[in-house]
Amino acid sequence: MKPHFTWITIGVDGGLNEGNLNAHLIAPIGSTDFACLDAGTLLAGIEVANQKGCFNDIKTIEGLTVEGTVLHHHIKAYLLTHPYLDHVQGLVVASPNDSKKPIMSLKGVIDDIESHLFNWRIWPNFGNRGVKPVLNQYQYLILDQGKKAPIPETSMNVEALPLAHGEHTESAAFLVESSGKYILYMGDTGPDEVEKRTTTEELWNRIAPLIREDRVHAISIETSYVDERPDDLLFSHLTPSWLMKAFRKLASIVDQENPRDSLRGLKVLITHIKPDVKSEVIPREIIQKQLQSHNDLGLDLLFIEQGKRYEF
Image 1 (cartoon, rainbow, N blue to C red):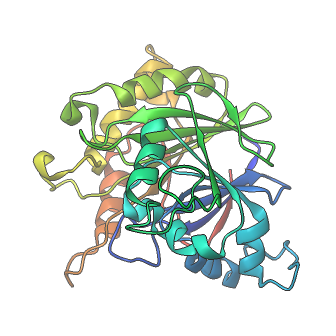
Image 2 (cartoon, rainbow, N blue to C red):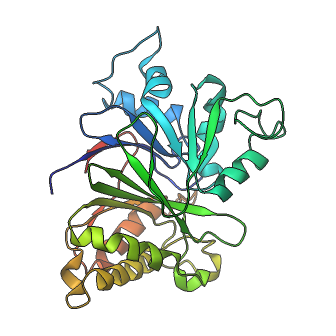
Image 3 (cartoon, rainbow, N blue to C red):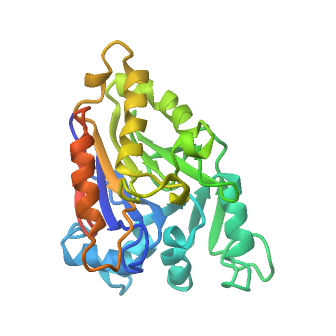
């Protein structure tokens, strides 16, 4: 499949390291008009990406640094899967030095950001509604579930679909589209079987026809914990075993007669691995080995890294 999207990872971990939390820039190849998928780490991640040459095609303007130019002029919108700090803290901290742009998500996510972050108690209200004074830095754009909407100032569209992240928090998956090509970015989610919901299966039903038509260029999905983690301590996250069980279900939906080959070669971007401070434990290495050993579908598993530029 010919690459269609540029993807720059500015943060990838699921916790602990405040300088490397989930955040990714996406644009069609040839464009530098990015949407930012989550923003757990923002400026610090942009700096890492710049040091690794990801923004060599961007010229500084208005006396800004390269990082400032990217932040002010090339990130056109934030697509936030949910309001947990490891997905929004970079945006919150950078907000006084950011430029005006939209924050896009499902209604419950936007409501939580308005009520619990930009509220003059946790942080000044940089939104365009809520507790006064309203600073109007960010415009809240509520996405209707399952309805395609344009991402302002880009050539991309997005469709938001719900995921299961416990009883108190709404979480979203974003199906990003450009010229009929797609990347699916999934926020935090627990297994359907543990969450007692069918959100992942419903998401699979939505994208299965696109996979059959060879229009899905990648799926980004979290794998927070190693297989040894008990189900009652997952806190709405996945392990390698649960991830592969979910993809086996997707494979059967895509091709019931030949599921073992229906996803072969599909690029799956592994994100949100939670680091550990124990010296003898390196979760990323363990999860990588476990996923590779479970991968009986021929998925192209990519353990993406901070500061790297990819084409999908």
